[in-house]
Image 1 (cartoon, rainbow, N blue to C red):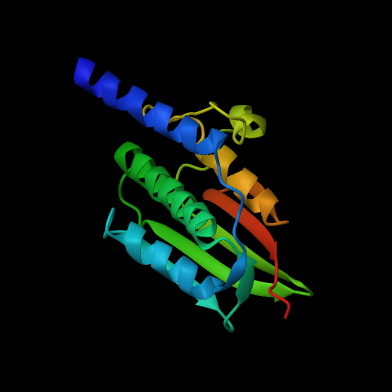
Image 2: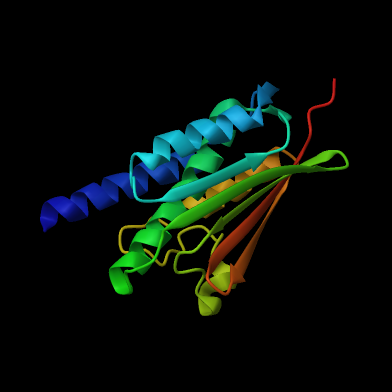
Length: 178
């Protein structure tokens, strides 16, 4: 319908504006465990059937812009939930799972997110973080671009892996140092 198209265009314009005028990060010390826990709690409301497994062997702190890092993890978890929903519509009959693990390697925090959704389309894999590239019906193609920019602005990296039964993401960020 026309209303749907208008809403989609509005969403696209808003996301483009956010991407184009992304503010400079304001860095402060924050507890990453709490940021990710809050993102999980928020996104659980979208699909109460998703089983979350969240593990961290201690509290991890980042020097980060909390709004931007919140956006990263909310977006990535939202993408996992959408992938699980899409797979469930196609094949059904499986337990929808998202595992989030935080560990430390030297001076870096590593966050691994694994879901058992549809995974990444191998043909489109190299384009996933390019602006305006999307595989979703209602996607703008800016979500992963914004995530990657935020992580880069925080001196981190993100790696995407297509695994046998779903997708895996590894985010590496420098740990907070006094």
